[in-house]
Length: 205
Length: 205
DNA sequence: GTCTATAGCTGGATAGAC
DNA sequence: GTCTATCCAGCTATAGAC
Image (cartoon, rainbow over all chains, first blue to last red; front, side, top):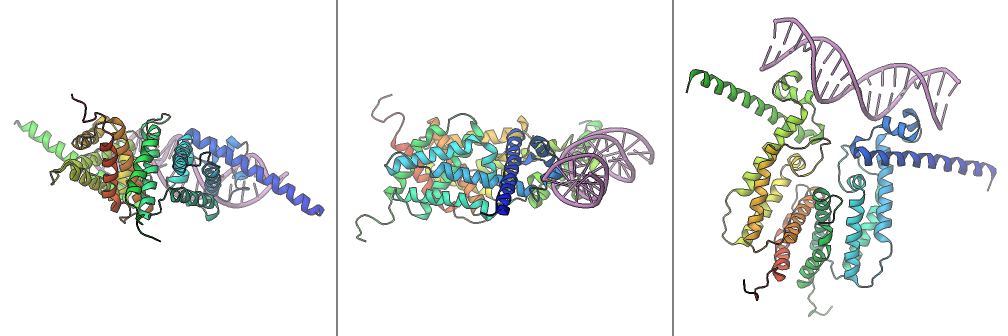
């Protein structure tokens, strides 16, 4: 490694950690005041710099939201794809739903940024979105291991899960009124899907 | 009726229709630009008046949102409680879910104002909220006629319905990808609830 | 009740010195 | 890269003439 490369890496690293500090400050602010209430003035003050300095690291406010989205998507992938203890596919499915609801309810602005479209003109970049796509692929695999591959059933599953999260957040924040229903919820879903298989077991394939 | 009362009624009526015109203009704007993008400048221009005149009819911007909420809640009650054709409780339940999804998906800002909490500091007044409460009471009655009274099952139902709406709106706006699932959805729910009755039929009461 | 005019504030983003 | 100073636009809300 040449001397100039060493220096470059050093500067890159400094720059990266400075960006991270700004993003951290942004998360602290949106957790206090709400996702859409983020302002560059407050952000700069919180990060111990001035407004123009923010623009040395991010092109615009949207770029900051995008960095936050990317971080949230990485956390989502990590949370949902880390190994599951039980072997039973059904237990894995229950555990995954538990993790999903826990992930969403434990950080409200993160959930809003990641799964709702509450910021007026903001669309995440493909790079930032990629981890979330990978996590959703894994979710489909977990369902497949339970014998569920019908697209209609996959759509039902997503509606079930997001409804559970929304009700828990909206009507019992900090509680577990809907979280307690998870076991029954999964039983209901599996019983319905497996009772009307697309490819009846009598058929040879 | 005395002459002064007549005049008073007349003025009240004029005032009422002027307020209604402002609220109508507000709806037109939020349908065009989004619920949170409503500004008093645009609103006044659209209504053919000036900003200060708006304050002759509403104390603040929040008061306008509250009037909109009240109107939306009345529409919701009307839509959900108007008579249902079929006698079969199950068919009524299906029809009510169909109406609910239709109501929510047909007017996105109305749905956001009524069922999500997307406006930063806004809370509806008790008066504006009242029709929505009445409609939800009727919903519980429809479930009761299907033999469903367990609070856990009622919570499951609300999660099911709101999840269906959210997925339809977020992932297939204008389409019917989740609406098509309604029949299966209700079958799944009823089969689950009635299979594990709280008061088993073997017990004498 | 309706207007003109404007106060008072906050927002994102930039110019230019250092 | 970081600052001071500032621009320009938007917002809610009010003062005061008519």
